Length: 342
Image (cartoon, rainbow, N blue to C red; front, side, top):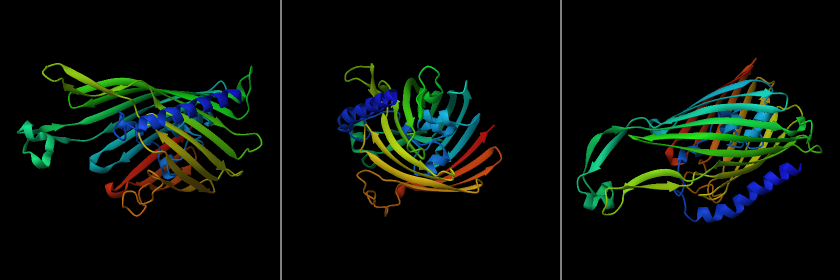
């Protein structure tokens, strides 16, 4: 219990004291924005509420402590279709060891597809933007990002020397590999998370996680004034703190959850969601991610921004999940996940 309280206080303190100062820089002040993309169709269908509800291999992308609750070896694969031809693939694996330790890992791959490369004819007018300057086509290029994750979690109730009922803790170590045209970079970050199910409230689980924590990442390079040398620009990764609560029925066929997200480069956000399983065969999910200052019409989309729905189908050891999420005026995205427990 003391270890859980210490971790929670540490993450909350970092979020409260570093979050407001970092947000002063505004959106775009962090690097590696692709780390903000959610993974796992189950979590996305529930409104991206998975900090406390995650209890399978998909929890690696949300709260690594959640993989301590997997019942056996699990493998998952997700495919996402985004706008403008962007594709996102994710796969992960987790398995218990020695009764109280769970290990896992995964790979995420994001590809932009082919993008036209342009050059300005007159650099003196380039500051006004493409609408003020004529430009020439100069071929094409692609943007790709790969995230390799190693995950581990401990169920403290299984510790022989210091058993703590209802507590799980986990960590991700992630390697980031990015390439834009002919320029590439590599860096590393970590995620730290914990879960707690009180003995007096066995249907409730509370979770907290710090994601994408690490040093500044090279985001761009440009020539210094009056010099041919290039100056590398570095920005912090999109550090994010999440906390949440989930209620699961005694029959384990209904889950209702709520998450609070505190990114260091934007306003805090609130998400709500849930799922219902019918005869452990078919599942229906829904959720809503409030944007900005809880303004349902911040993007003039009638409140559709942030809405998600999903469904699941389970047969024997295989579970198939689908999620549909709206992005307001940008359109919508589709995710499909296949999870196998064996």
